Length: 156
Image (cartoon, rainbow, N blue to C red):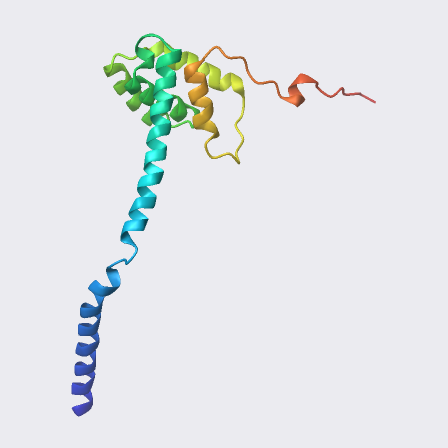
């Protein structure tokens, strides 16, 4: 009996120490510097997006240069490239709702396909290529060394 009571008392003391120590452990002494580092990264990303929208407005005419059309259109083309057709068509409905030009999606995707495969080691390669095709969908595919000079074959 005495052993059972001591176990209960020890368990209760352990639970109380966890409850009391939890607020002290959960507080981060470096909360402000971590927030400031996160904000610096967010500001850099926001500036990059604003620059991309400004570049699109400078290079394109009409509604394809509107920020909402650029954002949605680039997402649609990227989703089409990754074969996520259901999500691409849902985004395409939104794209149409904003009165964005559907023909620009077609020529941008055509440009993306003509450029060939992406470097799998570059994580942002798809976004960069989609943006460059969005800005200039008539650009010529980049010549690869293997495509420029095919190796001769012999039949012996």
